[in-house]
Length: 252
Image (cartoon, rainbow, N blue to C red):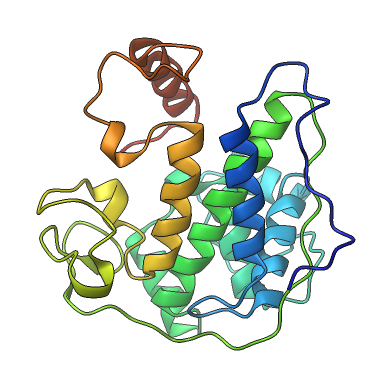
């Protein structure tokens, strides 16, 4: 279990009120992060989160962001973990230069030892930790301490019914959320943004949990007015979401 010395934010010191379900979702994610995943151990997963935070001040990433091409043989990241260089590069690139990631780069990583499953789980961790860290940063708060990893080995689970179509990695088909994956989305229809992490279903479950608290659950997506427990209505939420997407150059 996560050590008792790790204390998570209650957001009592926040300059703005924070709903209890947001704090609960953040605590639950840290608990899940510390556990072995499908392709990484608990220690690996915590190291990925730590390396993500290190990428924020990596001078090599800043220089590469300004380069005409981000693809060179040089890798000189400022690191804080002992993760393999190819893994560190993937973490830093997803964090700092994600809109220039290509299919050929993902495939070259596979050839170099970073398998598609491990890459997708890594991506899910980066996305989730960024979501929490940026929430805190927006409130002017420190980042939460990372938990102590739990022992155990990855389960190596790979779901059936995977296809290769619009993404750079295999994903569940739109009508393939069945069996153990029946909870991933209701019915036969879903969005590609959900399918993107389905090579590692638990990565999508973690993302859905955080998105349901910080944004909207899948069930609430059809509510175009707004929820009573939200401080802004749906139109205002989408204006904020659209502005952030534009700022981040989100081509999706």
